[in-house]
Image (tube, rainbow, N blue to C red; front, top):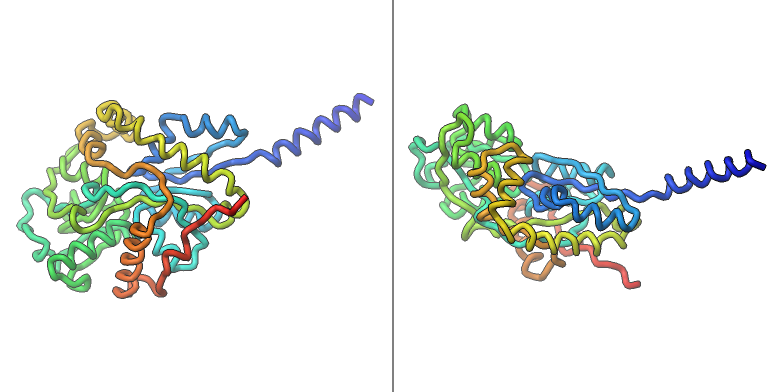
Amino acid sequence: MLSWALLVLALSSVASAEQARVLRIGYQKSSALLLAKLDGQLEQAFRQRGIKVEWREFTSGPPLLQGIANAALDVGEVGDAPGVFAQASGAALQYIAYAKPSPGSIGLVVKSGSPIRTLKELAGKRVGVAEGSSAHYFLLKALGSAGIAYKDIKPVFLQPPEGRAAFEAGSIDAWAVWDPFLAAAELGSGQGSKGRLLASGDGLVPFYGFYLASKKFLDESPDLVAPLLAQLEQLEARAKADVGKTAQTIATQLGIPIEVARLYESRKQRYGAKPLTAEVIKSQQELADLFFAQGLIKRSVVVNEYVWSPRAP
């Protein structure tokens, strides 16, 4: 009888383990999800539901979305462009929310001693950018505002860590990137010389953040979306209540100078997690249409087809 009891207990334990639920989240150093990971309240809220949260860091949006497309992740936050690139390639990803615009958090930087003073002078120059990223879209808009065609520059596709090295080495003439990499380049942290901001996203791009999830996750765990977005909505109040403390936390966790973290956090507005509005969808559609017109994606994307709506109970 004892052996039967032990067998039943063992089988019960196996069943419980199989039923354990996990929420896998991808984040970037520029994402509000980093702070959500650090303050622990999101994990605690899901732990109370019997759900484990797993985190994975990425250097930019495109590889993060690749992780979701490959079923290695459930959800993550990226900028405006990566979702369109992924959807154009056939990835089964859907928008579940957006974060507020933060146009001052993205820009084009040159070295302080560079002879380049205007966007027009980028013609023929080597410009570093992460392919398929928000900076890629920003670069197109910045060039267009100055009457420069994309084909007139020499894009050099680099992820942010490689972009910073190339910028410091002088192997690129300008760098399109987002915070905290932009702030670090401007302030010249470490041994690097200070950079000069040639243009920011102000007046060019809204620089929204977007939360995307795999279709598989949304089909199997739609009940996790609302509590996740509720936690992310609450994050802004905690982060902005003491910007200095938030900056110190970021500096400590990322190993960056405090002045870089202060600049980064002081201009960051990309918080919140709200259902996509008609205005936001229109903005994304303009992005998708521009990338298609430039031949950077191989098929057109109808953004509204990728906006998730919760099923009626």
